[in-house]
Image (cartoon, rainbow, N blue to C red; front, side, top):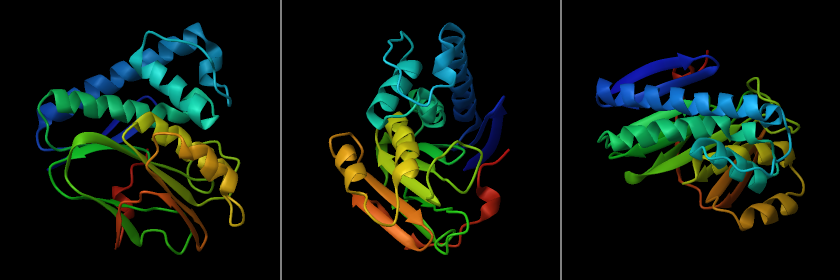
Length: 235
C-alpha cells in the first residue's frame, strides 16, 4: 500500500492506493474538482461565503453535489467542499481500475476497499479520542465517512461537539450533515436534529461531546484502537 500526502492550495489530503498511477488519477481529479469550485465562486461569490443554502443550478457535477448537500443540511455549499473533492478523487481512482482507494481530506474521507478498513476517531480532548476505530467491511462502492468538530481544526462551527461523524454513500451529503449536526448536537435534546436527518440518504451519525456519545441510524462496527496522530491529515 502507498500512502501519499497531497496538497493543492488549501486542499490538504492523504491518498492511499496500491499503485502510483492510481494516486496520479486522484490528484488530477481533485485539482479539476477544485477548479470547478473556484470558477463557481467567480460567477457567484456567495457560493464561497454563504452559511445558508443557495438555490441555484450548475452544470458542474461537483458544484451541484455541494449545492444539493447544503440544501439538505441547511448549510452553505462550502460545508461539503472537502468531502466532495475527496469523492471526485476516489471516483477517478475507481475509473482507473482501483480496488482499494482512500482519500482523507482533513477528516472527510471517501473510500472503496477490497479489504477491511479501520478509520480511527479523533475527537480533540474527549476521553474517547484516539481510542476508537470504525470498522468497514470490503466494498466495491464508494462510501463517505465525514467528521466535523467544534473544538478541533479551522472550520467554522457554532456547536460544542468534539466530533460528529456522518456515514453515507453520498460523500457530499455526509460532509454537509457533519457540519450541520456538529452545529446542533448537545448532551440534552437532539430530537429535532435526528428527525430532520431521518428522510435523507444519511446512514448513521456518531457524535461525541466530552464523554457523551450520540448514536443514530446504522453505525459501522466499532473496535478499540490506539490512533496514531501522525497519520492524521494536516497541513
